[in-house]
Length: 90
Image (cartoon, rainbow, N blue to C red):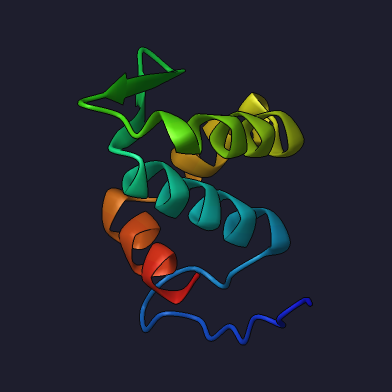
């Protein structure tokens, strides 16, 4: 059974795009698994503290489907606050 997402743009934030929403959902999934992503020296990096390994396969699937380049671009074009508020919508 599929559920439709109802999306509203966060106040003062970027207009969500399909890629932006996919990245926001990806980051929310990663957060649930105790995994964080960030740009370091313009490269996507991952940090995991006591990760929930059961969620690694879905994280990896999303990473492959969205693409590292798209995620890096999303990080370059948004602030941490914008990514956080979009993640609350997703």
